[in-house]
Length: 112
Image 1 (spheres, rainbow, N blue to C red):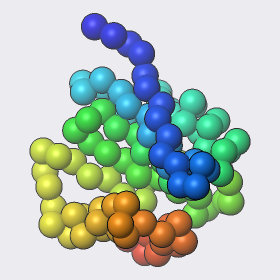
Image 2 (cartoon, one colour):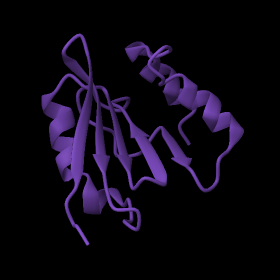
Image 3 (cartoon, rainbow, N blue to C red):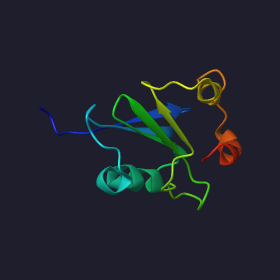
Image 4 (tube, helix red, strand yellow):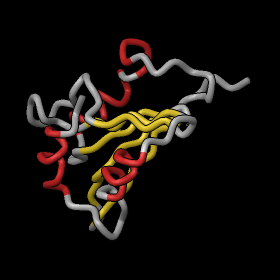
């Protein structure tokens, strides 16, 4: 079993816009245990969205609380084993054809 993590970045115009940290499918996604690398990269890149996932649960973060610092609470959590239709609509905002960096401010209202 591998204990390595994978950090990916999505770019637009050669600038990072989203960071993704991937864990094993049985990994607990507790921030205290896993996000040090994601927090560090978020603060030193231009990315304003990040995702922590184990391939089943996807936790989406941005910097609504303090600019250039990843929030400790996700603004959206999506579980592939418990798909909720309202969350699918929110996810559509993050697709390539609909993506707008300024929409992160709108997610403030859907954060739980």
